[in-house]
Amino acid sequence: MARLTQVMWIFAAVAAAEAVIFALPWWQQNMVLIGGDDTMTYEGYARDILLNGVLMNGGRPPGEGEPFYYQAFYPYFLALEHALFGEGMFGVVLVQRLLAAFAAWQLVAIAVALSVEAAWVVALPMASAFIAWKFWPIAAQPLNESLYVPLLAATAASLLRTARAPTLRRAGLAGLLSGVTAITRSTVLLSFAVVWPACWLIWKGRPKRHTLLALLAVSTLAVFSLIAIRNGIVARTFAPTSTELGITLLGGNEVPPGVAIDFSTRGHVYKRFGIGELTATVMEYAITAPGAFLQHQGRKALFALGFYEPYAPGWGYSPVYIAVWTTAIAGLALAVRQHAAIWVLLPALIAVTQFVAIVIVYPKGERLILPVHLLLVPYSAVFLARLVRTSRAPAAS
Image (cartoon, rainbow, N blue to C red):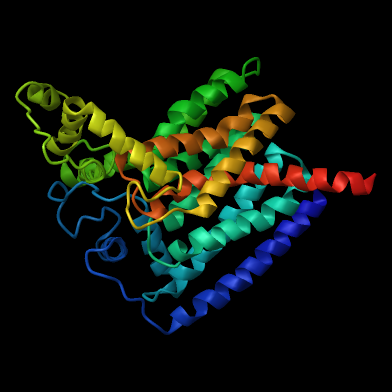
């Protein structure tokens, strides 16, 4: 373990130097942001926070603002970057480049936990290559995934450590980190519905089992509740998540021509449960034309797996994503065989729930499906590390 620690700190030093070199040009040049694009929107929100305070309400009095529309936390993180480094984009690019290296570090930690310490020999270059290829372009811009991807990797690693060797401190920290990840992008909430029961099973027979799970869940929900608290103060409304779900859901599930949406039968039910018209439209689409709806979900699922063409004609496919998830299946089988424990499934469970959430809502765009494959990289590294060890075994003997 001492050797691995030395290697990772050398990696951190090299990554820090590389991040400074990469970000340095932004010390004196401006970044062009497109009006109406996410990058400009997040920059606008960050300036609002810096100019008008943490409520991000445009300077309006409490009760006269609007609930969060976009994902909540990234504008605050972006505002902090500007507060520390100034108006330019140097600090933003520097910090987010460093976070990319941090994400690679977390992937290596997960791979080692799933296999053996020697797995770092494969996991480190593989995680670094994956991050460089798929995440560096995203991290170079003010985009929500620039923060969410490193947080998701860190959350998975923290939950894995807590599941394997639970302590109250680890459970609390994992919960707090989970909460911060959830307010950065709420699709991760679905994973907790699977991970928490899994932890309950993993901790069977351990002392303070109830306390551990309660601390994990309560600390997560305490952080996530900050969205509802802010929305209640600013907009005088109960909105526990950002309000973009309806338009995003409809954008990923547009009603095809020839399918008539009629609210006369179930409209009162949607109103009773506070389901908005956009979300209700998608639900009616699924009820009215289930065959067409399921076919559409299938095309989106193929897109999320790296087969872009059925859902986005002209996009082709992604050999990187396809290679990652196919080898990850073999790596998962190896990890299960080696450890015979439920905890080896945790990163995969989070990846699967990310897959489900993104497919249901709106997968179009590589940066949206990146989190799915991110958490499969350690399993892929486990498989490739086993191949390397197997290929060397005859020569060693």
